[in-house]
Image (cartoon, rainbow, N blue to C red; front, top):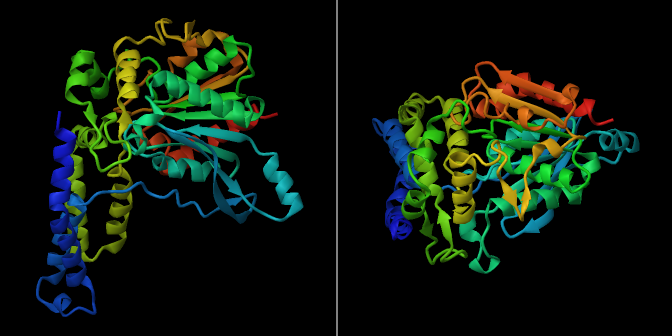
Length: 415
C-alpha cells in the first residue's frame, strides 16, 4: 500500500504554502513591519498562523527540564543516556549539587523507573510526570525511538521484545532499589516482565505503580477497545500497516504510522479539537497571548507523533485487546507462562481516572486480582475523581491529587 508515500508526497507538496503562511503571520504581526499597521492585520496574522500550525510537521519535543526544586532548593538537572537500544533509550534525569549534606539527602530518595507508553506520542508527553517526580526521587525514563528512524538491519520489535527491554532496564538499574511506574499501555508488558522475573527467582522491584492501563480490556470497554475488537487482526494488517518511505533511515520497515494514530486521536473528540483551534484563532485576534501560548505548548506535544513497529502494534492488538491473554492466564513468552501470582515481594498500586475514555474503570484495578501472591496489605488502589486519561499523570490533578499518594507509596516501600 502506498498511503505513507502519498502522505509524504502531500506533506512535501504543501511545505511551501505552509512556510508562506508562517512568514505571512509574522509579517502581519511584527511591530517593525508596515503590514502590521494595516486594517485587520491582527486577524490576517491569526488566520495565517492557524493555517501554518495545521499544516506544518511537528518534531519530537525536547524534555526541557533544566532544573527542579527539591529539598528546599533549586538544583540543575542533566539528561543522561544510560543505555541505548535500537528502539529505546534509557534516560536518567540527574540532579546536581556540590553540597555533601545535600548529596546524601538526594541519595536517600527512592529510585523510580517511569515506563512511557509506545502508543503514538513521544515519551516527552510525560514531561510533567517526570518533572514532578524529580522533586523527591531519582528518576529514569524509557524514551522510545520513532520506528521510521530505526534501520531495518536492527530487526523487528514485538511485544515480547518490549518485555525484554523492561527486564534489561530493571536489572541494569538494580531491582532491589527500584520502584517502577508504568503509564497506560506499558502496564501490560511491565506486569509481564516482573512476573517472569519473579517466577525465575530474580529480584523484583520494591513496588509497581500502574496508571490507566489495559490490564484486562474486557472490563468497561471504551471506544479504543471496541475498535480493536470490531475487526479481525487481518484487517489491521491490511489497512493500517505501511512501509516507511525512502527518505527515512527506516526505509522499508513495516510500521503503524504516527499520522494514522494522530488521526485516530483527533477522531475520538473532533468537536473539542475544532473548538480548541477556533479559540486559538480568537485569542490571537483579541491579543490574548497567554492562552495562545498555552495552546501552542499543548499541540506542539500532541501533534508530535511517532511510528510504531508493525510487530509491536499487531501483538498489542491481538494479545491485549482481542485475546486478553494476560488476564486469562494464557500468555506465554519463550515457552513460559506469564503468571502475576508469582510476584510476592513487590507492592502494587493501581491508579485510574474516573472519566478515562481510553482505559475504562476497572481495567487497571484488575491487576490486583491477578497478583494473588502479594500480601493484602501491599495492595493499594486510587480512583481520581473528575480525571480523564491524561489527568492522572499530567496537570493539576496529577500534581495535587495523585502525586502525594504516589510519593507516600514509594516512601512506604523504600525502607
